[in-house]
Image (cartoon, rainbow, N blue to C red; front, side, top):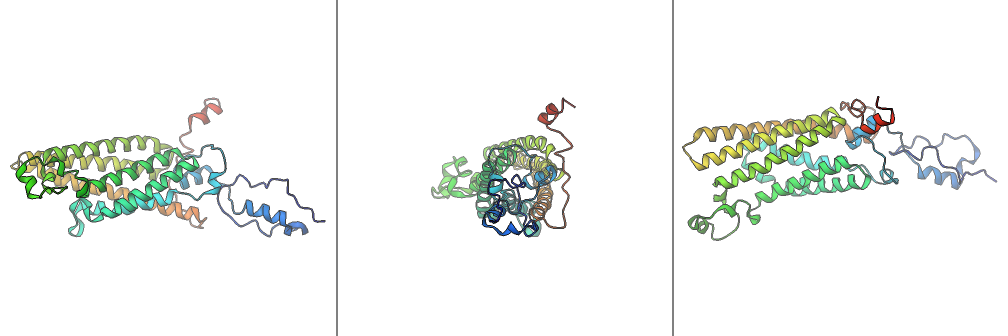
Length: 311
């Protein structure tokens, strides 16, 4: 009778990703038994993931989690990046006014909802399921940001129309929500600027946390902090201009800040596309690997230091 090994765990059970390189290596005659085949199916295609590769794939240092969910589900990181990049890249071009673009990305409102919002929320849920806290918080935050930004552009939400209190100006829109006159109300511009300021603040927190991930991720958050700061400055200056339309200096500063914010966002996008390429190549075990500047082993975690006696 063939000597099957139904009770022995396969030595590669703790592997995470897929790899079919082990089939047909065992020269024993019992390699074709059903139990052995079932064992190979259970552990098929896993490659040992180094800390550097794990960090590149999941944008987070490896942490211990219960269960085998990372071996059960696909990596949610790339789909969240797709949503982020296909929302931010066109918006950055709009902000810079390339090829006559403009309108604060209003033409991409659907993209903000169904790429930026939907895909990033789905990616965040995926990261939460497999126990990756940092990417889960980042993707969830930006998924909500794109939904909020898209909603601000939709007249039905009346984000700017609510600031129109002049009965004459309100009558011009026949009582419909989203009165465009609200875009010229100083209170709306200042209020929206505060939202951008605090988005910059949360990106600053993400920047500090990303120092344990990789250089590309650090670049993304650094440029986002700068982008949100510039955009907040643009809206504050628009508020000053609408308070006094003779204040042409404020209008000039607003235009410059808008372009600068778009430029920083474009740099963010370039770094994001590079990171997306690196993750996809690593996911497919492609022979060409793109470096991302791993920092997970350079800046050691508190638990690692405690385990090693504080060294």
